[in-house]
Length: 96
Length: 100
Length: 62
Image (cartoon, rainbow over all chains, first blue to last red; front, side, top):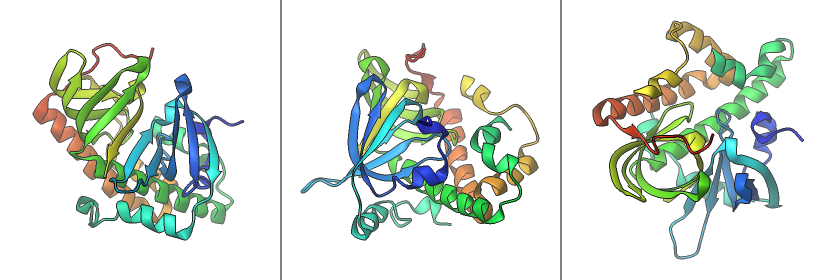
């Protein structure tokens, strides 16, 4: 299997909006919904929505990722919700 | 540049398949923009860094260089006390997490 | 500070990089390049102003 960091944008895009389990070096596991995979560093950004709590974000550095397994598919609603977290109005510096 | 060659082995060799290239560029832009927005949303947040050798530290996130090699942070809580200003090597880091 | 040494060697930064960005990001190259430049500027400015030191001093991941 192709190393995680050597995959193509198409292959990374398949994981976006899916609920996944990322395995990293040292056998650590991280679960959440994929917001993006950075095409430069292959880092995976996971979002978790927990009830009555702030959404939490985890970035797993591409060099440490050994495997990513899909647990469940996302919907339009999960994609919309996730995107709204990072919209330009929350991060105005970028909107120009 | 080396960065480009590392990023773009496929597009370099094939100049023929225009539409496939465009699709790949579109996907790459979207993924990259989302990542840059993620880094921006980390700015000034308390971030927990989970590093090699079971080292866990907290710090206030400042910025990253665009190649994601270094994280510039403030008030880093190390096991030996607080370091006011610090750089973390991304190679030392497995993951980092924060709340929005 | 040694983070400077992680940058690519001193080729002319402007033109070559723009054509590379175009190949990587196509129509969106200017937007991505703008975002990256802003981020790198923030990083450089913070490093100049705050003079952060590497922690830990020796890399963990050898």
